[in-house]
Structure formats: C-alpha cells, structure tokens
Amino acid sequence: MKNFIPLILAVLLGLAAVLAVGRLLHARRQATEKTTTVVAVARDVNAGEVLTSDAVMEKKVPVSARPAQAIFWTRAEMVVGQKALRSIAQGDYVLLSDVGLSRSMADIVGEGEWAVSLTVPAGGIARIVQPGDEVAVIGTFKVKSQVKTADLSAAPEEIAREATLVLFPRVRVLDVGTLSTGGEASAGELILALPPQQAQVLIAAQGKSRLTLALRRPGDDAAVNRIDTGMVNEETFDKLMQGLKTFEMPPVPGVITAPVPAKAAGQN
Image (cartoon, rainbow, N blue to C red):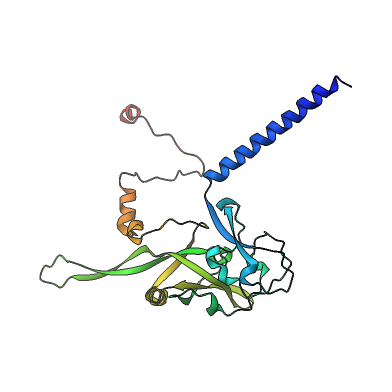
C-alpha cells in the first residue's frame, strides 16, 4: 500500500499542474481576445415576470462567444418592461427570443433617431439579419455627367453611368419582417434607426437606386468613413482589367490546348 502512495500523489500533482496550465492559458486568451458587453439577469427570473431595471445586469463576453440573439448592453432599455417568455437563471444572457414584444417600437428608437422602413429582396442578408444587428447600406445608382462631342460647337452630350458607394456604414436594425405575395416571401422589410437627415436620404435613395445590405460583425467598433470606402464605377473595372489578356475558351470543354512553339509555327 505504501508503494502506491507516491504514485497517487504524482497523479494528483500532475492533474493539478494540467488544471493550472489550462487556467493560465484560458486567462491569457481572455486577456487578449476582444470582448463586448451584453444584457444578463442579475437574479433568477420566472416565466411571465416583467423585467425591471434591477433585474438585469451588464455581462462581459468574448466577441466570438456572443450568442447571435444576445442583446448589447447599450440597448438594455429594449428589455426593461418586457415580459419573460421563459425562466432565466441568474447570470444567463437575455436573448431576443426570451422577451415578448409588449412595448411599442417607438420605445426602442434612440434619442435623435427616426425609424425608417427599407424593403430589400427576400433571401440573402434580409433572411439572416436580426433585430439589434448593425448593417451597412450600399447604393448603386446612375450618375449623370456631360461629355464633350467631336463637334466643339455643339452642346456637351449628357450620359448616365452607374456608380456604387456606401451610403451609411453603420445602421442599427430595430425590426425585421417579410412581405408576401401569393403566400410566398417576396421581399424583406427592415426597420432601421437613423438620424433625421440620413432618414430622408434613405427614403429618397429607395426610389433612385438599388440598395444592398452588408452585415457588420457584432461589437465591431471600427468607424468606417464613406470617404475611405470610395466609389466603384466603370473606371474601376477598366483599371482592374489593365494588363490582363483575354482568355479564350478551348473548343472542347475541360481541354486546354498547349500553345504552338514559335519555331514550329515558323516552319509551317
């Protein structure tokens, strides 16, 4: 029996060392990984209970571990006054699916913001975006410009060219819905929060351009300036093609014929 005591002690010390190293590595990862803060409950909440301000708390979580439906702490007012649809244990996240929509949409519009609807094609980003997400709004529209003609005495000719640029780099999504035609989803309808001036631009842009959404990473604090993103037009693609040779498809699909050497071609 005495012979087993050193062996048991060695095993226990080895396990303790493994646990200590694991905790150290975990602590280092947490120290280097970017975190964000979300809404959690400060005490046990029963199903049907109305959430009060003292029932919720701020909880720090790594960005990569944030649940998709977790609510950012900056939007904690969204859940105060809501009724819990299920029991939530102390310290657990409050998810969008955990609370009922008993409050008016106007209650979650931020100060100095307007709620504006945007209709986009069904599917794609509109299918996966959720309330609380942040998106970039990108517009493609025609820009009119005047070009001089060969006849210098004639008036310049007006032409329209397409251009694509970022209209709003960071917009908060308040709600997501679906428009149906014949029982099938035909379009997605998003409610976005924007300052009054930008809200007017978005309303006008819906009638003059094709709008596309780009989903932003949760908790991404990077400020994107429209000037930095630039503009894409015909000149962009012309520059992309500079120096490139035209590829010719082989006569037989999947078979590429090797080029004939220069000497052999001269002999023929």
